[in-house]
Image (cartoon, rainbow, N blue to C red; front, side, top):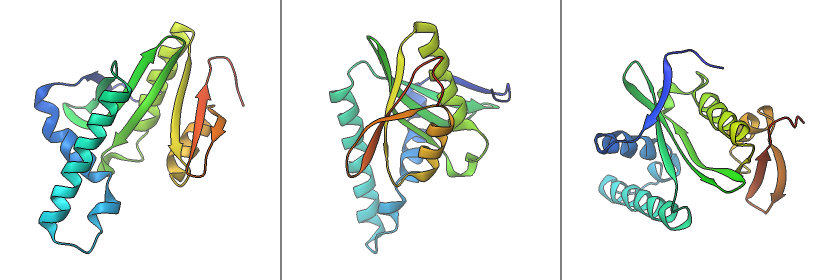
Length: 161
């Protein structure tokens, strides 16, 4: 599993600054645009609002967990537990904390939950997100559907690739 100093907790109002920083860190595509920094800041903020609205509209029962180590927020995951499936909506780790097994820890948390409830764990990953794809495939996920941009993956307890 992972070192015992990592743990997941529910999100609190005081986490908004961390969530803003984390979202910004995942939008390198926007941050690198050759435009006015104020415009870029507004663009990132509007994309973050659209993302949150999309999650709320498409996954009304979504839950958010913050990953901490030594009282410092390092990552976040959003998932929805529905009948027969847990759907991983989003997972993110601060760039400075990547490579420490934090995403794997969050994924294993959901796999354990899926195993306990005897449901599948599903997600969609963009095909060019090679790190994430490698993580999911190494964790036993199988590709069940795909389109030009992304792959739908599923994991079930007791099934190995």
